[in-house]
Image (tube, rainbow, N blue to C red; front, side, top):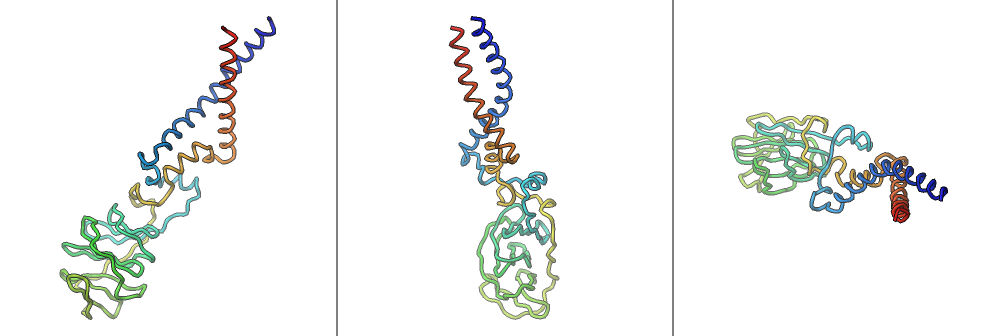
Length: 239
């Protein structure tokens, strides 16, 4: 009888002490597990985090950012994605090299293509650039867009279907500026950075903290099994 009581006491102390440790990790398992079960609902796979400490932790390579500041908003290229303000309007196979705006429209030049859109970010058309040179630039004269190099300029008709030789633009082209993504407000839907889904998966498995984190989560899982067994044992002994 004494041995049984001693065994129960030792088991009860162990159950309490280990239970606190396991409960903290089990809370992480439960919360992250529930969130991951509803990835689509919470848009975890389409929400990206760009906090400096998080990108440093993941050794995420710094995205290349360049921008052209228009009168009302900026045209920004982050890696291969083109934004007007905080709206993603397209992608590119090359660097941003030009942007110009009239009262009604905006024209963006990047890579070997042009993106024609409204000031609200609605894309009207995407088309190849009539000048396949990396040093081309965009400008405007009145309500007409112009594209050219240092010596030769083309001017477009209102539908951007025909480009004819023209004079240098009335206003000089806007320059492209290099920037850091840490100085630009990026929308959460932009696929740059660490997705919220990946962060939760790494928290759930413990991989966010390397091999030690994985070991702790393994111990927590084993601890939950042992706690269930010891709890049932104590309950049965008290009956």
